Amino acid sequence: MVDGDGDLWLRDRGTGTWTMPEFNPKEFPARCGEVLTWDQLAREFGPLTGLADDRRIGGGRR
Image 1 (cartoon, helix red, strand yellow):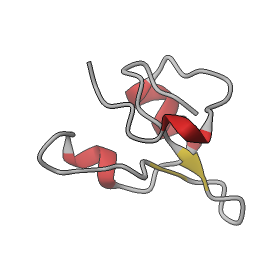
Image 2 (cartoon, helix red, strand yellow):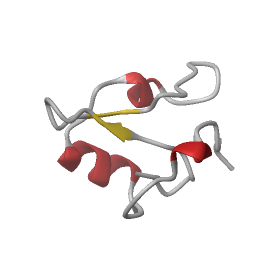
Image 3 (cartoon, helix red, strand yellow):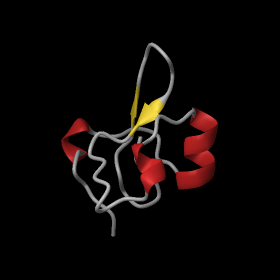
């Protein structure tokens, strides 16, 4: 999933939660380093795209 800033989020299939694999506390708000539910991700970082291409890891904020 890609958020409104173009950052990649990945879903844990076991728990259904979402994490930002490229989280760096110097570049992103602390909340981006947390494990989020779908509702939290959509509310705080939407709009979200349907699917993310794994090659986009490291897309970064604009």
